[in-house]
Length: 482
Ligand code: DQQ
Image 1 (cartoon, helix red, strand yellow):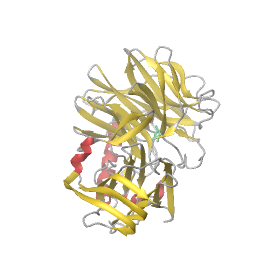
Image 2: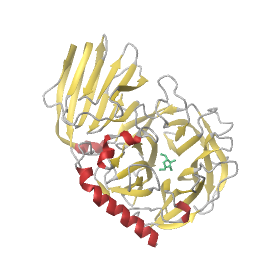
Image 3: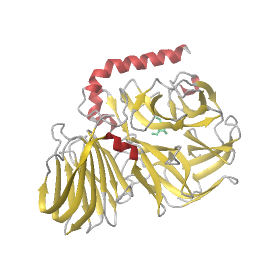
Image 4: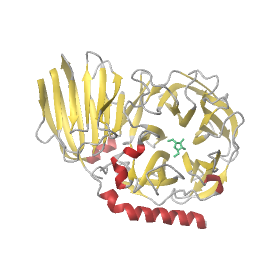
C-alpha cells in the first residue's frame, strides 16, 4: 500500500511540475485525449459501466519514454466531454513492478473486473509476465487480486494484453502471444468464474496459422462479433513492408471469420490493415448500450522515432484517436467517427460549392487548426485533387492510379514522407484536424489515415488544388475544446 501511495504521489507531483510546459505547447491537442504529462500509449479497459464510459490508458507519468506503466483513467458520460480521473493502477506490486501493461475490463455482478498484464523484468532484461485481476466497485479505485493464471506451455513470456468477453454463459480471453518457435499468435483462454482460467490453445497465428509466418509477436488482440461475423483485431510485430502495405514499424489490423466457442476454434480470412496512416496502433473496442462497437486506438506506434516528436520538449507524448464506430461493409471493417463528435462543432457549417480547374484556392473562413471538413459528391476529371494543411501535410487522390496519398513533413528531418492506399473511387472525405493530428476518413470510413503532423503553428491555411478539373461540395466546421 505504501509503495502504491508513493508512486501515485510522485506521478501527481510530476504532472504538477510539468503542467505549465504542457499547457504552453502550441501542439497541444484541443479535443483528443492526451496525457496530462509524460507518455500515453495503448487504450485499456474501454467499457461503458453504470452508464459512464471509461477509458484507461497506458501511462508513463515520469518521462516521455516507455517503462513501468500506470493505468491512467478518463471517464465520460457522452464520449465527448472527458474527465481525467485518479490513477487506476500503479505498478506497486512484485508481479507488475515493471509495469501494469495493457488489458481490458468487463462487468461482473455489478463490479468492474480489469484484467491486465503484470510486467516483470530482471537486470539482464529477462521477462516474466503475469495476467492479473483488479476489481472495482466504482471504476475508479481498484482492489488488486494479483495473477490469475500461469504462462501456458509452448509460449514465451511475450504473453500479454488480455481481452476478456462473455459468451454463452462462459468467459473467454484472448492474449497476445509468441510461440516457442517465435511466431506471433493470439492465445485463447476460458473460465466459468473469471478467476480460474484454462488455456484452450492458439486462436490465430502461431506455428501452423492460416496466415503463415505473420511476425514474431501479436500485441493487443481483441475478438468481437460485428454483423454476424467474428472479427479478430490485433497488432502484429515483425511484418516486412510489402509495396504500399505495412509501412509502419508495426501494424494494426484484423481478420474476419467465425469463432466456435464450443471447440475454441476460429476460421478466418486474410489480414487487412485498419488504418493507412503513420500513427495508429493497439486499438481496443467495446460494445455500448446502443449496440455499437466503439474503437479507440493509440495515435502512435512503438519504436517509431518516438523521441523526435516536438512535443517531447514540452514533456508530453502521444494521444488517442477520436472514438470511432465500426461497421462491417462487404466483409471489410469501416471506421466511422462517432456521431457524438458533432457536439465539438461550433456554429453552423460553412458550405461552399467548389469547382477548381488547374488551380490552387483557399476559401474565406476555411482555415484553422481545429477543424472538421467534409467533401461530398467529389468528381475529378483529369489529373488529381489535393488539400494541403499549412506546411504540415497534404492529402491527394489520383483517380488515374486509384492511389490516395497522405504526405507529411517528417518531424525527424523535415523531408516529405508518405503513406498510401488504393481506392477504386473517392466519393467523400471527412477530415478531423486537431493542432498536431489529422484523421482522414474516405468514403464514410472505408479507409482511414491517422497521423501526427506538425505544421508551423502560425500557418493555419488550408489550400484546395486540382491539376485538372475537380468539383465537390465542401463543409467546414471549427471545432472547440469540449
Ligand atoms: N504496450 C503495452 C503492452 C503492449 C504494448 C505496454 C503495445 O502491454 O503489448 O505499454 O503498444
